Image (cartoon, rainbow, N blue to C red; front, side, top):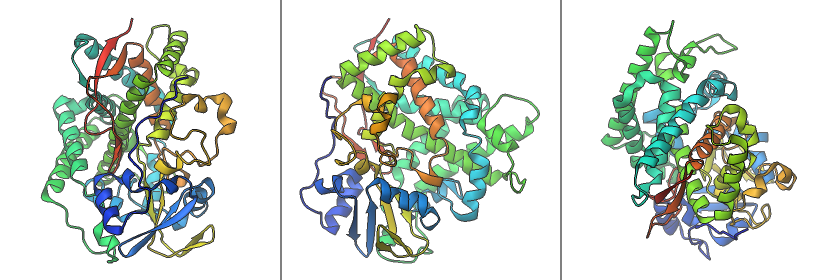
Length: 456
């Protein structure tokens, strides 16, 4: 097998000063971690008036996110305050009783049991992308990052909103989400200055305008869906309208429905798009991996579109994607704020402090992974499961706050890869490159230009 070491940012040889850390974090969170961070299992970092504790081993990850979850269930101030104008009290940033009630209602909606309803929509959208690629010339570069964002947005629109959203509203909501993510600040300076959490955060007017654009579309979709509740096609909005809290019997009001729809869209759009873009880049650099993928697709599918029943048989396709999100985890930094005094591996954590789990470090840790910077999908094949360490691989987080739609997103990715790889090979366009950049999510730069080579 070709020994592929995909790109990663230069790692500082020595710890950065507070000012240099802030400057690097604003540019790219991945640039702040020095070489030794890929060997340490737990360490602290001082940033202005705050001390951050980084859990970087399976036992410390389990301690923070599983065993002491109740002490660390609150998302970081950056996540809560940065996303509040858009998500309100949505599942992604809420905590306490609100989070528990919403989780009971929302988790079943994105559960794998509903995949039979939505798999045909996923495959149809991916097939339309493949057909569009086939109509473009082989010498015409495509921006794969944009292509995957368009594909995942289309899938989310069809599965979350159903056909009633319409092309115009779909374009509106996708553009507004993109603009919002571009505008979000990367650090909550109020927190790092040691100021109280209740101090209001001032957001640029453009952030509020983007949020209002999204809310307007979602409110209209919810109203339309309520009017057609007695009939119509399946969609996640419809399922949310009909869902009840299994403990209290309560339903979601319109504001809560809108917030949870926004959460589902955000979680299923950009992160999946980035991961699929990285997949095509890695396949283009590892022809032996790509060839093995094509052999599996030919054996399992025999040139027909994939179905839900095929997913368990596509073990190498799944391994290709799982290795991709090991190297390039979609959310490479997970931060929680302590709700009470706690201790992790004997280290005290005071109330209000930040505890971080950094998949970017954990997934490349030299103790828990052989050749950690290499692209080796075989490590995720079923026969190699015994060599993996539990809680050393957490692309969708872990514990009670694990992504509720993780299995849904994994199945979506497998189906998209299988559908598109049957029809096309992608190669880097001349002069193009990929460079991992992280602000809130991890992207292969601003663009990823590739050429499409049709397959029979």
